[in-house]
View (cartoon, rainbow, N blue to C red):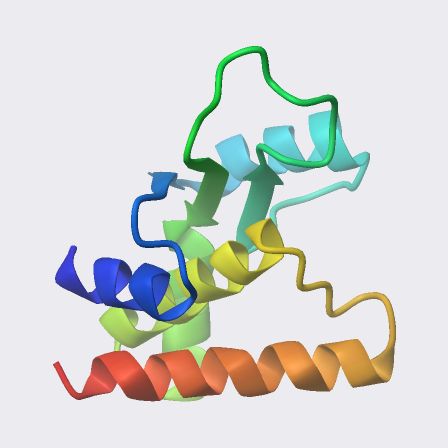
Length: 127
């Protein structure tokens, strides 16, 4: 929990709330299909609270990050990262999406997001 708090503070989200769901491939595939109209499981989904009409009640809730633990295990095995590092990488990726980063817009945006992920991972490796 301290690592996520450090990431959020570094990103300027000192009093923000974040919902995290660790789930399996079947459930994340259902969410992927329902909300993004994409078939199959993915490693991480992010559902920001912003982007629509303003809420009637002011909130510090950033949104929801959903991670497939099964995808994380596979990625960990393929990359040689520890499972913990892979999970934090995916959580950081989701948080960045909540804050408006989008690697699918352009190669430049993808590079920017990747560099920010790496910077934040290095920040929490110290812990």
